[in-house]
Amino acid sequence: MQEFHYGQDQLTWSMALAIADGRRSGTLTEATRIKIHQNAMTVEEIAQSDQVVYGVNTGFGPLCTTRINARDTRTLQENILKSHAVGVGDAIQPRLSKLMLVLKIHALAQGYSGVKVATVERLIWHLDQHLIPVVPQQGSVGASGDLAPLAHLFLPLIGHGEIWKDGKQMPADLALKESKCRPLVLGPKEGLALINGTQFMTAHGIVALEELRSVMDHADLIGALMIEGLNGSIKPFREELHQLRPFKGTQYTAATIFNLLNGSAIQSAHQQCAKVQDPYSMRCIPQVHGATRNAWLHVKDLLETEMNSVTDNPVIISRELTISGGSFHGQPIAIPMDYLAIAASELGNISDRRVYLSLGGETEQVPKLLMKETGLNSGFMILQYTTAALASENKSLCFPASADSIPTSLGQEDHVSMGSISGRKLRAIISNVRKILAIEMICAAQAKDFHRPRRSTPIIEAIHSEFRKHVPHLEEDQPMGQVLHAAQQIIENGDLLKVAVKTARAAKLPYFGKHNELFRTED
Image (cartoon, rainbow, N blue to C red; front, side, top):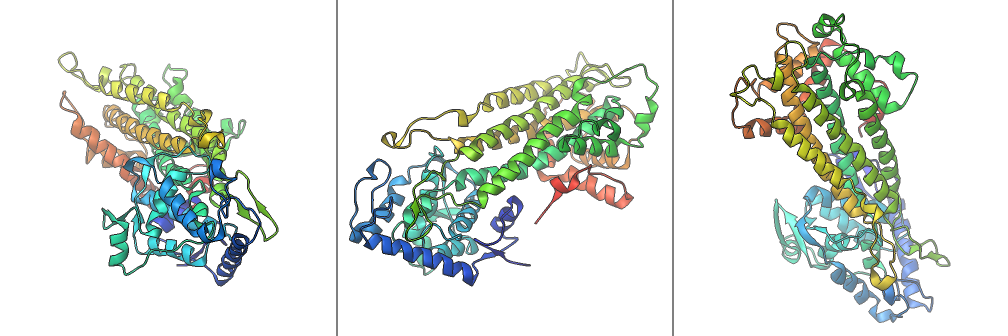
């Protein structure tokens, strides 16, 4: 398998995940090593000269006017890691820490940050050896980058902090000793280069892209099953309609659901019914699900720009030109992640409406509350309470973190992005939507059961059959904990999607819709 060349190749969100997951490896080319070394030598020259450069021979933040003499520049860099490691809360998942390492290696390898080749190689070593730093999830305001999380990420370089090893946390100095590896001695600017950047929030954004793509696929699939269960019409998904308003996400969703339902015996059985049109939660699936897909595409492009950027400060262009700027500021991705949070939340909002719709008993053959014997039994009524609660919680989480700013660093950092919070909230919303969709799947499968012996398309029948292996049809009230857990696991594992794709291929049926290449590309 071809290696990824840090600092040289173009990094995509799926490639970053492949490296973090160990499915691809990354390395430095000789040309990249030379560029990094030359830039590091430039910083060494500056540190020994009378030229004043922020963070090389000055203090940090409000101490930027305090001059540091040449003999103390290395102590300065270690101190910044120690002083800025003030994160709190639970540790992020090791996978996120790995992603942060991948992103930081790629940024440093571009040769504008003044770090040594040995430092970049040590970061690659941590990845290759699966010795992953422990990073708390709270403490970043997303302005000078993700200072606190990045400080924790790189404390192990100097023998401090903690490391994940074999699924357990252990002191970094002990882990290094066991690996017969000495702590690094940081050179001028290296500590600052390590903690400046947006790698914490960007890593959250990358994982959110992965999670939301799965959620979007399941939303289309489960929405199609609900349309079958409630005798919805296939006509709103015809290509002729969506050529007249050609948003890519809308066209994709419409074509996908049309492919899923085309040829269904359930569809043909109610073509001449008196119902003129379906409620919005079914009829407008292309517009609502599609808008989320449009947002996903937009945010993917922005995040991929970010992950291939230099987000350090100052940036060392040459011996003559060093620039103290604001490339570490998280606003360019904080706002998009807040926007994607709204887009994700809407998938749950419309799914909750379809759950509610399924309980009304308005569909021929489908009983009220999705159970024949109600009164003594409450049926599926209370499931919608849960979807309502989750949808409401998501609306609260949609408040944009990037709309807030609290000055820090004695006013030197007087506008901050709060992008780390944007990323964390986005993933919380996606998790809630996944739970809502699991409940919709329970209701949609139950509704479809009442249409027997009529059958749907091979793909819809296959996912219904797969679901029924884990979640039974319910004839009376029972504790729902295990049912909910099983449904959530099926969604989280992607089992329905796998079965759908396998069935489509075996039967040589179309599945994914127009613009498939935008949503299915893999490295």
